[in-house]
Length: 135
Image 1 (cartoon, rainbow, N blue to C red):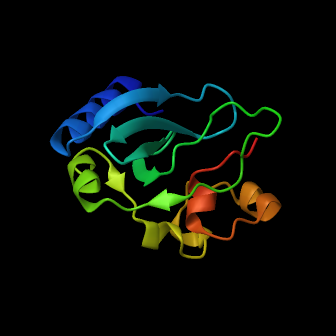
Image 2 (image 1 turned 135 degrees about the vertical axis):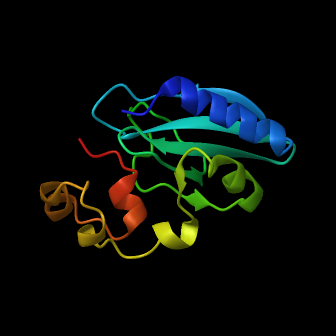
């Protein structure tokens, strides 16, 4: 399990160093989704720092709701790249870029992925396999 306190500190540090401000944390305590988000506001956009709950992996995406309700989006995340923000986070987590996450999913390279989930959900990309709303 990822330490929420460390994730919070990382998000605040990254936001401060890149001219943004953390406005919200969205933590998942249920089976789905399998990630947490720290929403960072910049003058012209919002970016979610997305951290796997179980692996020390972080990426950036468009902010998404955590709770699944009628009409809530639970499909694949829309990943974003911000080299400055990712560089600050790289000291504490393995950072994954959009290019990496949009590659086809090769479970042999990611032994922590459950083969049963891969067979059942059939993710098209590595990003879908690592950051998802599967139950």
